[in-house]
Image 1 (tube, rainbow, N blue to C red):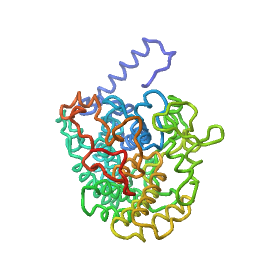
Image 2 (cartoon, one colour; image 1 turned 135 degrees about the horizontal axis):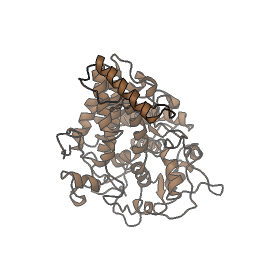
Image 3 (cartoon, helix red, strand yellow; image 1 turned 30 degrees about the vertical axis):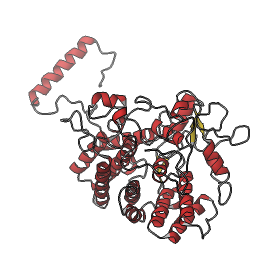
Image 4 (cartoon, rainbow, N blue to C red; image 1 turned 120 degrees about the horizontal axis):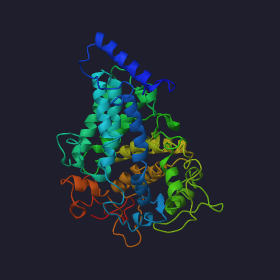
Length: 470
């Protein structure tokens, strides 16, 4: 707000204001739009400001409680205190435990992304439009992956207060079309966000390759239901993230600035030892079946008393290993989509389309980059499949995609403990959503599993799948 010098007498200030008003009235027509708007306090955020908000939200929304719960269910982490003991085995989860999907639509979510897209169309900036569309597909895919049927086509429509839930398969199909549009737009005109893109700095090539990997991931998620999905995934992954060593990796934006810290760092600071590293992943990394100890163990896991000590599901205690100094650093940028994932999508898709030699080649390219020895030739198809999915389980440490992989393959064949019937197969709708929208079913009326995820009777090695039930 403009100010006048504090030394000016009140009467002098009033007279000056009256004189100024009279002068303006003599030469200015005080009619027309926008006269009530203060140019120093814009009523609408710019696209660059909104994109910063989206980037910040994604770092929080995609790596916070839902991600933590999935990491616990996948036994990469373990609940070792307070309510996290129950979120872990026996998976005692109710409507209010983790929160709902509503946060992915409001501030920093779908509402802001649609505004950015509208602005980009008005400015004829196809590059900015394409980037916002990739962001939309990225966020909404997680929503559909976790909850299944969710509002999408009628979402954020101001004329529809209770949007219907779209079937998961429809949301997936719509997101594929959204990514197709994004790829087309990224090849068009426009300057895009430039440095306001905190992930890729506006690099059109990286955003395009990311869109291809996201399409591959979406096809993979339908492979249990849709014939030919593996071939479609392979075609996209062949055009996906292409830079070994992290040059193409899509990571959250974090820093040591208060409010921008890594979510796992914030959790440890605020909730102490409620979560620890899981014993399963510690044991796996310490003794891989091929090549011995994995060099990523000290990069992922910290030591206690000079040793790596993970917790079993639901094992309470304060003396278990936490994350390594690298991953627990407040500025650690959590990987969301990586070259390693793209490589292993190619490996699985090649194997499932009959090219075992190609699958082994892509697997070993990723293993070499990770510092591992090569998987030898001569494995059976089932054995090679196990090696691919085990490597992906490790490479995507703390990434919720391992849950989708597990639900598709039952590998690793994780045991559920403490009398639990099965490892959770979907996230429960939030209580606030059911209260606001009658289309959201109550827990006892919601499906146990999502459309893309029929229960597996057996794991990849032919044994009974321990953690999946219809």
